[in-house]
Length: 238
Image (cartoon, rainbow, N blue to C red; front, side, top):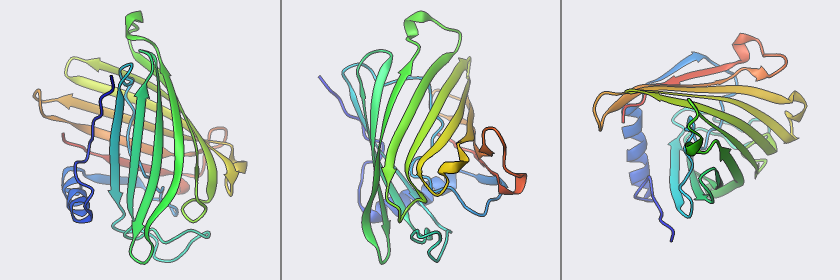
C-alpha cells in the first residue's frame, strides 16, 4: 500500500506568489560573498539521513521565485528575473536503506509561459537504522538533463554524501556535495565542491529555528578565487 504527502497544497499562481512572500518573511537570506553568476536553484535543501519508508511514495512540490535576476539573455539562457520555478519531486522507498527520487523541473515567466526545464533521477542508499551507528550516513547520486535555455550544462551529476546527528534538541547535518557537468560549457571544470550545512534547535515540539549554509567554492582540486565563490546563509523558522 502506498501513501502520498504534499508539501504545497495549491497550484494557483497567486497562491504561489503569496507563499513566496511568506517564505521571504520567514527566511533571512544573508549573502556572504556574491558571485557574478547566481546559482539557478530549483530545489534548495540540506538533506537529512532519513529515507522514505519501504512501500511508501512521497510527493513534494518545491517552488521559488526570483525577485531579482538577469534581465537579458546570458550564455544563451533565458533571463532569470521574475522566473517562478516549480519542481515536482516523487520519491519511493524500496527498503529501509534504499529509495529513488524523480524530479520534474518547470519554469514560468511572463512572455515565456510555463515551460518544461528537465528531469533528474536520484537513487539514495543509507546505513540502516538497525545498525545503530552514532551518526546518520547516506549517499545520494542525482543525474539528469536540463534544457540549454535554462542551464549552460545540459547533463549533470551530483554526488552528495549526507552526515547528520540529533543531539538532544540540536540537529546537525553536513552535505559535502560534489557537482559534475557531464555535457556543457563547464564540463572541463571537473567536480565542483558545494558544501551545505544545517544547524537547528527545537525550541518547542512545534517550533524549530536555526540556519542553513549553501556554498560553491569551485573545482575540488583547485578552489576558485574568493570573489568568484558563492556563499549564502538562510535562517529558517518552522
